[in-house]
Amino acid sequence: MTLQLSKSDILGIRNRLEIKGQAFIDGRFVDAASGETFDNISPRDGQVIAKVAACDTADVDRAVTAARRAFEAGVWRDRSPKERKKVLQRFAALFEKHMDELAVLETLDMGKPISESRTIDVNVVLDTLEWYAECPDKLYDEIAPTGPNQLAIITREPVGVVGAVVPWNFPMLMATWKLAPALAMGNSVILKPAEQSPLTAIRMAELAAEAGIPDGVFNVVPGFGPTAGKAMGMHMDIDCLAFTGSGGVGKLFLQYAGQSNMKRVYLECGGKSPNIILDDVPELRAAAERAATAICFNQGEVCVAPSRLILSERIQDQFLDIVVDTAKSIRPGDPLDPETKLGALVEDGHRSRVESYIAKGREEGARLVLGGERPETGLDGYYVNPTIFADVKNSMTIAREEIFGPVLSAITVKDDEEAVRVANDTNYGLAAAVWTRDLSRAHKISRKLRAGSVWVNCYDHGDVTVPFGGFKQSGNGRDKSLHALDKYTELKTTWIEL
Image (cartoon, rainbow, N blue to C red; front, side, top):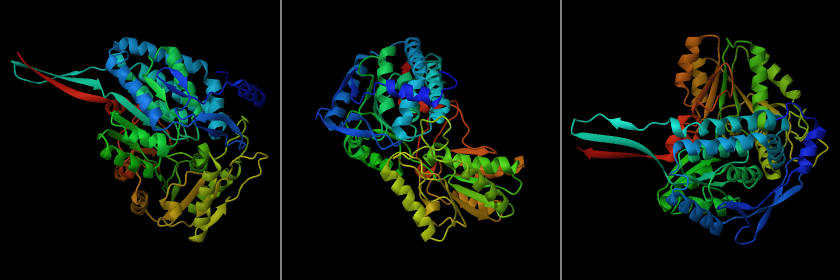
């Protein structure tokens, strides 16, 4: 990937894109069985960029049939770990070759700045593909301790047909976090991308086939949640379903599993993450600038967005002033411009939803200190300015519900005990952060925080080597790291009398 690209370079890539909107089932592109399509609209300018297959139950059935046939035939499952590794390495290499193209496609599809797509998203996806490609021939089974006349073998086996339903905020990344470990363990995968952002998933399936993933092993069925998504949740021949998205839809998938074959369901359902700034915060300015940039990253459409800024009352005014000044400099603009730091929200309906939360914050008595209005960008896309509320109570709607936009709620606390109490007073438990110079203080507070990830003196740091997931209604199971492999394997005990 070229290090620097001008806007004209990026527009050149955009003009050369061959955008495909068909489903990818059993190794080939196909139309929806119904022949129906839907408009894929770019949030950048509100323009239709592709017609996408509107898959439903018949198409999910086709994909599951292909996936099951491939699994039972062993064309992928029964390959040696070293052979699966080599194919996945080729997949990663092909992805790397097309990273600029995929970054532009991602930006067009969901509105994030090209600077983020090119420097963050595609690089993290590549890292994930490469890391899991190395896993198949480095995982060992176990021998249990038994008496001299028995041999007990504990083996990992692929779970079978895996359904993956992913959101629109990080389309490639969320898909890869699921398909890479699932494929590494020998499963067949059916991926349903969000209807707002299906294009990179379709392209990745094409690259996977080119790399040598056998027909039927990796399928993509674009479509809507109530049709294609529900069909996957209810399908009697999907063994495992991994979902990232809203809590409401996550609960539906749990119901679908209970109504069908009790398939394993793994969920990551968002958060309302607290960013705790204590009175001994190191490098106050740097921490305040990070609080502002983190809530604006990916337009705030981030499940770990630090949307609750929990401030010690001793430093609240100084800290909040810097947050506001920093956020003022983050202006929405053309996502295809390398200078843009804040792109477009994914669709007009979502922008209206974010704006309704801003109105609710005002109605409930929070003090609006920045933003709240639509910017002038010269584009007919879906943009919102960074918005900051002060004097927020943790009982207010903007502090309780996931807004998924660049909206920050500042909550003041008196001491560490109140900070922890407010931080944990939420249905979610995905992530949290604490900023302090005192290492013991940091350890004590981080242990009390009910969250799957806790950052100390930083925000949203991580690597494919560490697990990601949440407590409470943020979900179950983990993406990333070797722990993710547990979702896509069965443990078998074979007991032998000698």
